[in-house]
Image (cartoon, helix red, strand yellow):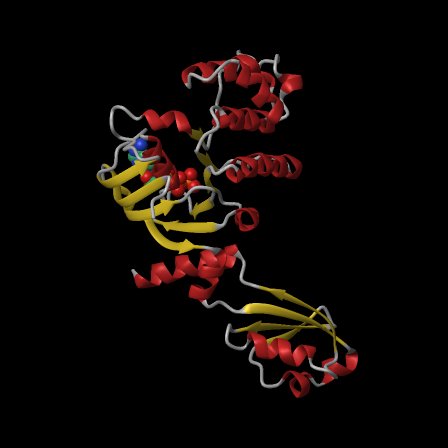
Length: 306
Ligand code: ATP
């Protein structure tokens, strides 16, 4: 299987700092992949390597079939990049800014107005960027990244500082592109947000890839308990072990709920008992491990293995 991005045994050192340590992965077409990790984990470095802005110390990278570090990297025109700290010339208008980037990417000027419209900036197109709010600058950054209908979109912490409505429209826009087959790599610290967006998650820790898979795969590997919350009648609360059976680690919450951390192999049994005819359960919620919890788990297991 080939991918739009292939990274094999990449090492990147900056002097004594080993920013990326022997990392390999492949990004296929039409997939949204979340790149997560603490500050300094190596996420931005990986994106810069894919863009050909820096060269690997060792290892191989192919982006759209080409080596980004080679002099002639024609595929760069098919890449979109939204840097972590997007900054523009404050004295240019939104339109002039995007027209400048369009010329760099050799894109027709007519795409500028279309893209400004797509990110909702048409009313502010003739205003100087210096007067833009953070959210407007971020939207202009996205329009810049979307120039030329990129096949690979690298978004470095794209939603920082965006209000919930803008965040939603931001994801709608990139999802549209993914639907047309683009590869999306999103780095972010907003794990709850990524949980709903990313088909796959790559977790980095100190330059090492510590986990890589869909949320379901990571849940299977981590074997973290699923939280089951039962709304129970007063009579049921008085004799929980009688109807729930010998379940370790249940607790009473909010006065009328029973919460259980069910190990993967006990989950079905707990649910069966809770939904059994005669069980004093009025309602239930099943909460699988969140990305936050998985992230903490994989980081901890790598730290203890070191
Ligand atoms: P954040 O979440 O804070 O953006 P990150 O995961 O993107 O972090 P990187 O920016 O990739 O992290 O940095 C990885 C490591 O490499 C850090 O220790 C950083 O200080 C170091 N580093 C990155 N670029 C350089 C550089 N040009 N020169 C020296 N060290 C660098």
